[in-house]
Image 1: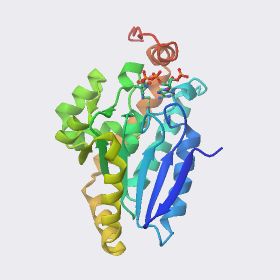
Image 2 (image 1 turned 30 degrees about the vertical axis):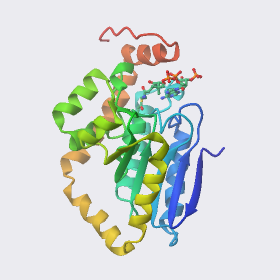
Image 3 (image 1 turned 60 degrees about the vertical axis):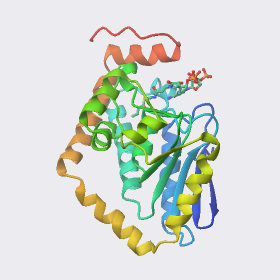
Image 4 (image 1 turned 30 degrees about the horizontal axis):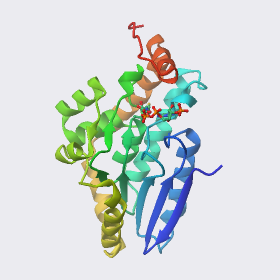
Length: 257
Ligand SMILES: C/C=C/C(=O)SCCNC(=O)CCNC(=O)[C@H](O)C(C)(C)COP(=O)(O)OP(=O)(O)OC[C@H]1O[C@@H](n2cnc3c(N)ncnc32)[C@H](O)[C@@H]1OP(=O)(O)O
């Protein structure tokens, strides 16, 4: 089954995530995105990628319902590693990737957006990492990328409280580039994508390649440890309680076990 649509116009490839009801990032969606990017990488007529979500949200994060089918901590750690590798592939992709975020980019949805080079948001979108609300932690490099973008104090606040930022706040905190009314978001995003598509692909790719040197070894150690701990929290009673509470639409009761 296909969860992504790709439409190329004016050298801009628009990738739409279309997985009702919330564009949750199941492993099938992540694999398909990886495949689509590999295809677009070598297509000369594509200079810029624009990523958006169909329906109410950009993406509400990893597929919480799919979590109930995974059993061991090692499997969760592998799932985290797959997402981390994919978002790293996006960050180092030789063509600019712009996320156009409306509705919500939560958990893995925000981690996906943070793997993009530019984030444009609707003013009322919710952007957050609410994994602690589920008794879990982020697993797709969110613990590493969020503080790099908003600073450690704001990142701790967002992680500890699970409270999202609005699109306007995300711009103020450096998490997003610009906020627009939801009706004009895609037009504005396309306008920026077209402008970038007119630049020389070699210089654009060079800027992206050079930006990677600002990442330290500590970042890579950080995501490795994140994947290990991601696997560990899932085997805790609190992790199971958090996921169950989400599915049963009730508040979780964490016991510290
Ligand atoms: C490594 C990465 C880890 C992670 O990403 S962990 C996941 C982090 N994400 C979250 O915790 C977000 C969870 N979702 C929400 O907080 C809310 O939802 C929203 C704010 C996105 C929307 O709220 P509202 O407008 O009240 O709608 P609704 O009835 O809660 O959701 C609509 C349908 O979407 C499903 N859904 C939402 N998020 C997810 C998800 N992340 N995984 C799987 N399903 C999800 C719901 O269950 C429901 O479905 P039905 O209509 O069948 O009851």
